[in-house]
Each structure stands twice: as structure tokens, then as C-alpha cells.
Length: 277
Length: 360
Image 1: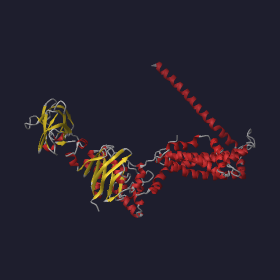
Image 2: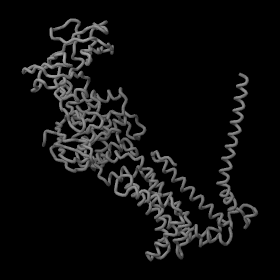
Image 3: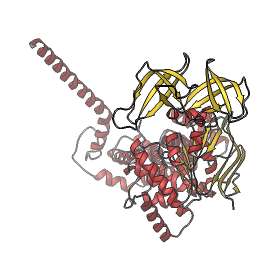
Image 4: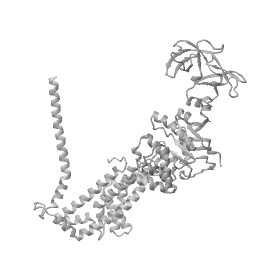
């Protein structure tokens, strides 16, 4: 009896020790991931011009940022690119997802695999191929070529997210609508669309975030006067990291995180049963 | 105008190499409660979907109120469906669900309101307008589905195993309610079920289906008392099958030698000739047991098993080394009924018309 208690205590002690180790491991992991970001945000409030020293708290860099016309122009470009690319790719991505989940057609499997390709292949591969395509089609590089390139990879992301939603869609609901005198268009508008809307919005927000952040593909397809925010930051960094860049990055970070969280929330909510994998 | 609500004329439906519905012809009368009964995969649901317009026949014609439907889409057919899993719109309230069909047909808003509230009243769900389907119990969802279909006042209501998802007690209650509802609204009901008891209690007429074909159409009594073939006799209720060879066929009566040793007399239902192999079908509850032979030709056997089941007692009686027959005796008497113990010799009798001669 006594021996068993001692043994149990030993096991409990060992368990506690293991638990602490696991906690430590978790903290270390998150530190590794988020410490640079936290430092970046902290230094965006640094009154000193140099990263090496802390010169007190200031909002001056954010103020300076607002007055920077080059950054303003870049932000405008980024929003035009991300907005247009998102709108177009959401429409096409949703159509692709609907077609892929509803119909069986010749070459569907190959088409399906090709659809995933832009998600899997390295950005750099697409980034090298796209200007080639534009040169061959004699298209002047500029905002339109960036938009087309962004649409090219965003369609896949939207299609994948919408398809995940459609996988849980009960087709008898459409039959029920048709049984209740709704024609094909009314059925789509009143039943199908509202039910997959969380997926579509989730896909759209994901597309917007990806487009806003994209550097590699944009870099290769941009022309004169089509500098987007990430490209502007890159050219600023070449002259040395200033707290101004820290401030700008912090703002972009907040924007991206808000969009991603909203996207996840929409995919999860809306009466659906989508699990985020 | 046709006297038939729905008519199927040699309708077939093929899915690739699979024949789901095979040359089915049916006539369903106005105001009738008509059931399509059969095991899963027999084609009953496909038949219903052909009437609703979700499927288009490979061959043959579906008529609704005398009009050939051809490839008319579901939204232009004067029928409504109650789906097996109800298919309520999850993003709409109960009110919006029920109002959907009327809205699509551009009924004025005020009339919609009145009719929706009436329909919910009719299925005994008043006050639930603002609930969402996922806030309702299975039985309540079922009622909303009914209201959503009936509010459109269709000529024909199609029901695809509507009670399948409910528990037994609720199912029994809903059976009676549905039947009463059908009486009240006077709409033709076409009801798909695999539950023979449900079909027997609810229907005016039943079509028994198997492997895409209609085997028999008739009232519940006709189907139960005079099954057309072995499948129907076996599927509806319980039946003893005694295979044998016809040894004597003289007009009214036929003598069948069962297991080569036991002659049984049955009324001739169609021209059968001596030497033909046939099956005799007898319902267990039609057979009476006796301690003494009721007539000199009575067949006898030995009681092998006695199962007391409350309202009745089941006996397994061995007639020949190869054949065991089931007998059900009503426990109608108060107190201890006459019980034949295991191992005792009993004599069997049944009214001549209770035995059916099946030639298939």
C-alpha cells in the first residue's frame, strides 16, 4: 500500500516535470515566432533614429508616415491592385468552385490538380513566368499587369475556400427551392448564394490579404509608376531601416491580421460547419 | 380534365447501365392517399422524383392532371414535395421557409402572411414563425416541411419517407395526423415508404415495388389478403411458404403435394395443370390449431417451439422433416388460454380462401 503510494507520487512528480517542460517549449516556440514582430512594433514608437538605442516614446514616425507622398501613392496603388484583383478573383474563383463541385466533365481531375498549382508552386516560378507572358503578348508592365498576375494566383485560393464550404452544402436544399417554384437563378440567389456567402467572403478576404502583402510576383510584374506598398518598403529599406518603416510595417501587420481573423471568423460562422485546417 | 391526379405511362429511368425504374405504369386518383412501398433501392424514390420533375424519364410519360410533363422543370409543376431530411432552408426563419413558395409565385404580401399563419396553425405550430430550423425538434421540423408544401395548395403532395427520421412513438402519432390532415385538405398524397405497416395503416391504395418494377397495386386489404406473388406475400406481413407439386387439378380445387408426402387442398386461382411446381402461401394468423383432427384430411405436425408474445402466441409446428410452419393464435380469452406444449401433436386447419396458390 505504502509502496504504491510512493510510486504514484513519483509518477505524479514526473508528470508535473514533463508538463513544465512542455509549457516552456510552447513559450519558446511562440517567442521565436512573435518576438521579432513585437520588437518591430515597439521600435516603431522609438524616438531615437537608430535601432540600437531606445530614445523614449514617440508617435512622430506615424505622423511622418502620413505626410510621405511616396508612401501615400504606393498605398493607393496597393489598394487598387488588391481591390480589383480580389473582386475579379472572387467571382471567378466562386464560379470555378461551383463548377467543380457540381459537374463531372472530361479532364476534371487534371483541371482540379492545375487549380491547386498556384498555391503549391513557389512564387518565384510564377514571378519569372508572368513577365515572359506579358512580353510575349506585348503588354506594357504596370498596374494592369500586376492586377492580372494577382488574379492568377488568387483564383485558386478563393476556389479552395469556397469549395470547402460547398462540400457541406446539401443539394436537396436547391431541389426544395425548385420544388417551391424558384427557377435556377432564383434558387441560386435565394438559397445557394446566401448559404455559401461566408465561404465567398472568407475567400475574398484571404485574396485581399495575399494581394496586399505580395512582393515577389508584384516585383517582377510592376512597371514604372506602379509601385505598391511592399515594393516601396523594399526600396526604403535599401537606404537603411528607419523607425518610419517600422511604423509602416506595424500598420500593415494590423491590417493583415484583422483581415485574416475576419476571414477565419466568416468561414467558421454563418451556420456552417467548416473546420479550419 | 382527367380523373387521375397523376398518371405514369410505361415510365423508365436509367442511370447509365442501372435501370432504376422499369416500365412503370400507374394511375393515381384525385384525392387519393397512394403509397409506393418497397425495400430500399426498389425505385420508389426515383419514381417520386420523376413525378416531381427532379428526374426526367428515359422513356415513357408522366401526366399530372392529364397534362404530359415531358421535361417540365420542377418549378413549373403543380406538385410540392416533403423531403426525407425536410430540406428546410437553414438561413431562413420558419416564416420565411413557409412563405418561400408563395413569394416565388408573387402572391401579395398580405395574402402570404395570412396563408403562412394558417398553414402553421394547420400543422399545430403557431407562434414559431421567428425560429430557425435548427432551433426546432425533429417533429417540429417535419411539420414546418409539411406547412411549407401545403401552403401552396398543390394538386399533389409528394412525401419521401417523411417520418423516417422520427422515433417510433412520434412516427405513430404523425401517421394518424398526416392521414387526418389529408382528409381535411383533400389533396392527393403520394407517399414513399419502406415500412409496410405504415403503408397499410395510411393508404387508400398501395403499389408494391421491387427492382424498379411495380409488382402489385391495390387496397391494403387486397395486397395483404391476395398478394400477387411471393415477393409481395413475403414483404407485406408474415407468410408461410409451402412449395409443392400439383397432383390434382379439378376446376375449383387443386391438390398440392408438399414435400412429396403431404397433400394440401387450395382453391385454384388460375389455370394450373397437374405436375406444375407451385407455392402455397398461408398467413400465420389464419391457421387454427386443434388437439383432435377437425376433418379427416386435416394435416398435422409436432409443436417445436412456443413463444408467448402478449396479444398472441406463436407456434413453430414441424409438418415434415423439411417444413416448419408458423402459427399465431390470438390470446383473446381471459386467463390461461389453451396452450399446446412443445412436443405435442396438433392438427391444422384454415379457411379454404386463406391459402393462396402462387405459381411464380
